[in-house]
Image (tube, rainbow, N blue to C red; front, top):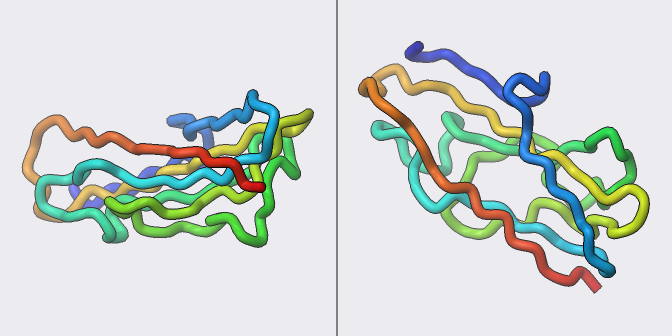
Amino acid sequence: QLNDTDNTTDNNPPPFLIENNGNVKLNISIYAQTNLWDSKSLNTTYFQFKVDNSTETNAFNPSFSQTSWINMLNISKLSIVQLNFTNNNTAEVDILVTVPENEPQGSKSTTVIMEGVYSG
């Protein structure tokens, strides 16, 4: 419905789950390729994300990671710093959406990109 808000922090719907099955720590950047809404651009409070612990705590460096809600951008945003590759190697990416008050009916979609690079 118009003006409704939902997010994945209650696991309904579930968040994205990122797992590092490699052999080095990773930095993960996140962005969207296209607008989710017809009436609102990216970089608004209508489409946000944040990083959270999965059931495996201490999997990444929270001091330098995006652990509070931020607007989804169309440019790469460093979001998960030093995602571990051993025992605790998963993190969640929560999504928050609010339907704009003037959004036309119809199907909505976007592509969210998550890029990993060696963190050193």
